[in-house]
Amino acid sequence: MDYRISPGKPLIGTARVDGDKSISHRSIMLGSLADGATRITRILEGEDVLATIDAFRAMGVEIVRDDQGYLVHGVGIDGLKQPKKMLDMGNSGTAFRLMTGILAGQPWSVTLGGDASLSSRPMGRIIRPLAEMGARFESVEEKPPVTVTGAQSLKGLRYEMPVASAQVKSALLFAGLYADGKTEVREPAPTRDHTERMLSGFGYVVNRHGAANEWVSLEGGGRLKSTEIEVPADLSSATFFILGALISKNSELLLPGVGVNPSRDGVIGIFQRMGGDISILNRREVGGEPVADLLIKSSKLHGVSLSHDDIALAVDEIPSVAVAAACAEGVTDISGAEELRVKESDRIATTVAGLKALGASVSEKQDGMVITGGNLEGGRVESHGDHRIAMAFAVAGNVCSSQVQIADVECVATSFPGFYDLYSYVGLDISIS
Image (cartoon, rainbow, N blue to C red):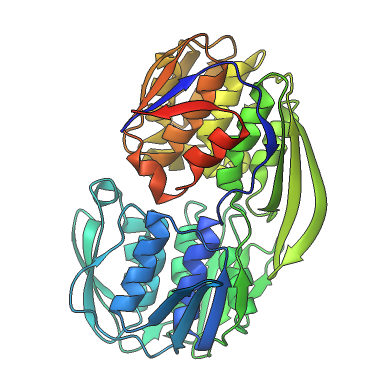
């Protein structure tokens, strides 16, 4: 299945994007481990999150969908049951890595697997510290499928992450729930703090310390209390609409209820540094997470230089930033983005290839790319099964000189099943073939 986009339409209106994927995953996981029933509304019903729901159902958790959302009947921290077959996490690296932390504390073995893309991604950064805590792992070259044999009692760990990663941090904190003593994780740069916020929301004490609050820690052996969660709109999904309104002439979009957690809102700051007209309105908190309404207008963008610290707060949004850079005046230099090499695709290589396919001036670096802004042409972009590549370049199609084709877009359903309908609603001339 391919997208075809014809250029030149203004993007106008109000668009409520789908629920936040990171929070949706964690709400199912922590709700399953809590004592009592947790109500979750506005959850993302993409393939990745549905895979997480299926995995916990396979481990004995009753999860019911009704007209209000989902009701998760938690089994308690020690109530999961050994599944009868491999847990298939589909395309979700987040679910796979966080689940590994939970499974490290179970008194049985299970195999975690996924699709072809997930099976190519390295998991060593998760496996090694969890092995230090006492879990055992079997895999080929530390890639999925991975068989996890949990420890009857994990050991608390003091761990300094060599690379900033919210997924590694979260996996270790989840394992720490089952550990004797304290589990401490040091971040070399700030990463998403959804796990810490949500653990606190479920009544679990999480501490921050260090000169820059770079250490996060918890004591094992506690309990999680059920709660109610309203999932905010996903900023990563909203980014495609922010991008579209910024680069398309005569456009103005309102995006209500978007999560603006300061540990992951870096893309807003990057676009504003590029000259983007983005107004942050009606700031508020929903379930402990900061949200706001975003008003975006067409803008004349200019190039910027981005470093490792910028990437840490916007790692999933870099393909969209790269498209914006290709439409901006001047040069954008992206460095410190090595993490993009091990996403759903090698996102440095696939982003560069996509930009070149549309006639952009771009050169690849080991840790990023250099983009000289200009005019984009039409052409065919290969998604390589990567949902963020597919969506970012679909949006780019609105400002190209002729029609753009995005190949193999089934992957979009993993994170944003409503993308096509919602973008059609605000004006993008997009069709499926």
